Length: 223
Image 1 (cartoon, rainbow, N blue to C red):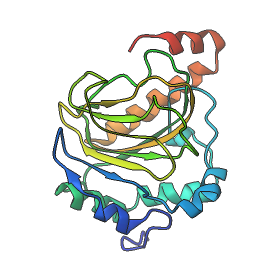
Image 2 (image 1 turned 180 degrees about the vertical axis):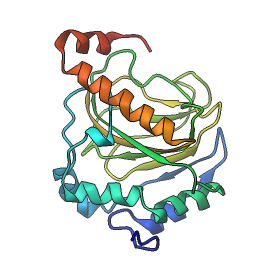
Image 3 (image 1 turned 60 degrees about the vertical axis):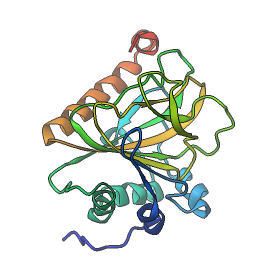
Image 4 (image 1 turned 90 degrees about the horizontal axis):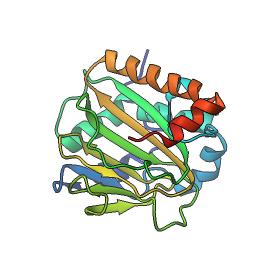
């Protein structure tokens, strides 16, 4: 039986609970270190290897126990309650979906500004990149669809977490930058149907990327 009160194994509950809720340009909270820096090497050693650009659904990922413990934390009732408390909402009937990206190519259409799907209720982004030595490519909380209209930005490095309430103006994105970019996205969504659709969509995309000609088309396709 699932222990709904089990402590988080990797995520820093106190740091997440203490993160300030910012109201403008939309509701979001940033955690500088949501995972202990001392665990970086162990967790990253167990992280999935993602060779291509784009996002991959959790069922398509292969990873070791330390990274798996982070996933268990994110899917736990205890973490869900942290998010509920932060945004003062009930997510008990909102199923989670997890996707992850591993790198970016620097192509013009990566990091385009978007507010997230209307099917998403809350989005949580968690960085797993070992280091981010670039000026470009930082994740940006935006005031509009303009990627230069920045309210807040941060590098997608290990342990950094952004969570936000999805709305019609929850714009975010980043400027294209080639390099390893390990970042996990957890979304609480409106239905199990949407969870199945998202995992099917990302699975189909992963299969297409295994075909060289299709991979090239995907890389350069406009958003």
